[in-house]
Amino acid sequence: MAVWKQLLLCLVVLVIAGGGWYAYQHRDTLFGGAAQQDAAGTGAPGAGGGRRGGGFAAGPTLVVSAPVGSDIVTDDVRAVGTVLVTQSINVYPQVTAEVTEVLFKAADKVKKGQALVRLDDADQKVALDLAQVALSDAKKTLDRSQRLADTNNLTLSALQDAQSAERKGEIGVLSAQIALDRRTINAPFDGVVGISNLSVGDLVTPTTVITTLDDPSVMKVSFLIPERYAGRVALGQAITASSESKPGTVINGKLTAIDTRVDPTARTLKLEATLDAAAAQAIGVRPGMAIKVELPFPGEKQLAVSALSIQWDRTGSYIWKVAGDGVARVPITILERQSGRVLVASDDLKEGDRVVVEGLQRLRPGVKIAEAGAGKPEAASANGAKPVAQGS
Image (cartoon, rainbow, N blue to C red):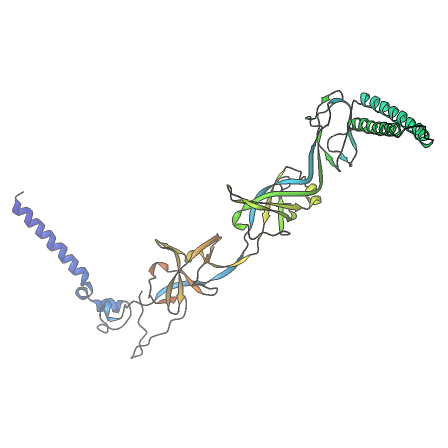
């Protein structure tokens, strides 16, 4: 195609496009704005002008608002702790010897001083008998020496030697008795013994674990909390605990120990709480078990708004607060999300204020608003005609 034909075709296209744009911009004038007004039922022909004449003048933006509520928010700390008892030990023998008798079975409740295991003590009994005989001879010698000294027939040094011999005899008996006593392993306190693999004939040494012994009369739980709560905990503060052995059952307790320092690596503070031992034992809680601990703190009142009222932009989250017949943009800080609502903090918001929850897309600073469904004042015309419909 020749160049001049291409230029002519482009010119025709531009003229058509320009004409279309002009017709769209002046459609009310070209196609009769008055006829449209009559069709809308707003007056007789010629009674009103175009859109700018008032028949379709923009009115307030319709919105739906809701009041700002509040809620008491409890700041609870949840942790997993380890169950402890005040007295819990592994029982060891003090000597190397052969087991001659095992006097307990697993889960037995024992009293302080009760014999648990007896070891071979034949040599120690013989040694004790010899020591007692030696002590008896020393006492007789001292008695004769004392009588001779009373009649001045014995020197003072000989009397002192007899007294020393008696004392050595007493020490020998005491030493033999201690060696014999160590052949019987006794419970050092009241408690419950654990499982033992010990059998008669086993050779035990001071490194052999005879059994375990726990005193479950007092149960504690040790757990960690974040360092930011360090200034809010206090001795005697109530806690609740629950165990996987019986989910849903609550064990009450209270704080009885707070560590003096924060772990610089984990940034946590160690706490100990005493549990209701009877309740814990009733559901099978045992030392060493992991249980869930909940440490509640006094609740704080926080503002609550509908989740539909919150908007975001590059500066953060905000809401539109109803201010008279307009709105004001209020920045907020989101604290916690709940079902259908959000807990927020803001210096420019208080309980009872109304915030927009519907019609947010058309809101701008300075925009006039009207509550959807609220009564609107009727603007009667001078000739008694019906009021003009307001378009948005």
